[in-house]
Image 1: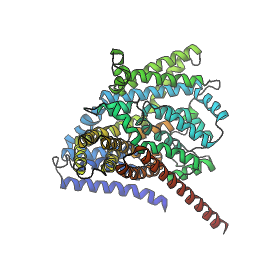
Image 2: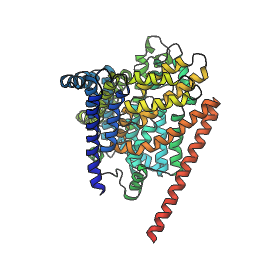
Image 3: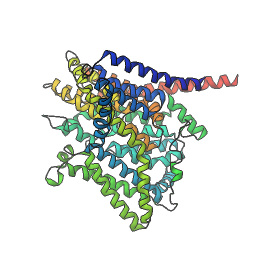
Image 4: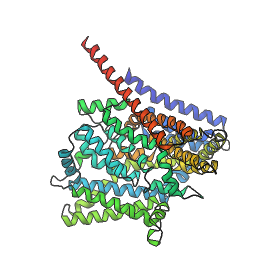
Length: 542
């Protein structure tokens, strides 16, 4: 029965999409869909299909096709042109996007090099001697994710490649690893003053000291702070729920790290011919070089070597260019290091280049489709529509505005898959709403950033979510479905905390309120799971 349902449901979902699109064709014109609620239909269709069919590529493309049809008034020639010339080709020729793709390919190559030298395996052996428990492996993953705060892409792929052998040994499911990676990517970057995210946020602030304002928002960024607290509580309480509970049970009891039949990365580690005599330095050197190289690359693009201060250079940096240049320099130094140590022959190093590229192809394809969908949604005026909603909602709701902004940011970021684009839209509006009340402006700005990260964290078309799946070598839809209940729990408690903060206006008291509420919620879930186990045991005994 379940198999029949699993086959029928995707077909029904696709049929429903066809009906909706046809109905939209009769109800709208190319002019009426722009800057209206219709502009949110394409990403919503893509997300719904991805969750129902568990197939990302076709879901994203159907969303793209829907947006192009609505935008062009169902004109066949214009639709094709909008999808490819103005969509896919446009996003791939964007310097910023291309810089990110180059950065990903270089990271893929470096991961292959670290594996080929045996550096990852050596770290796994070292960690095996020092990390004795599942909780220790999870906490080590969280700690490493927090330490790599420069950029979320760098975080996702680096933490995944380093910790995967350790978590595999302790039977931690790939879905749980992907969640830990994702939860220490954007949520950490958004509260790190020295990061590509801080630079991006400061760039959207006009008439204010961007970095100073960013630092002031950190204590109020409840979603990011509560997400970090939630990870620690999950490990300490040893509690899992939702689809993650099944994945973790399978990993612990059956040593099945994937749970679902689809496991595209299962043989990835076996295919890599790791050397048995690798050393931990073969892993640490590339990572440290990457960290230093990326920092230097970012401040270089911000004019640090032209006389600008460190903070000013970071605020003015171009993250995609800086990461690309820094990672390339790190790659060159890593190759020279390996050749000097004779850890690899030159031919072996060159063999890692196409292998690293191939490892990133799924992520690159999903990113390309996600960017295209975002571009088409922007062309339809989704941002202007949401901006108008927020601006009208701001009047008369001063105390509740942080909650309103948080919820709107969650929805927009979830639908478009981009947190940067979301707070780029909302931050200028929030600042304009509070020209005299600085405390409320900081609180509302922080809720905007928190909501953007939350929506990005939940969205299956988010680039960070995609990168977390790639870093953990986890099936993307498994990561999305298992992470969503955790993210939504944290989002609900964050929303309540913003209501409380609107009245109290004290970051410390509000944060304590949120942490206590979160701890109590997870403890209640743990008790519920224990009672359910007892009931099941009693039923089996009967």
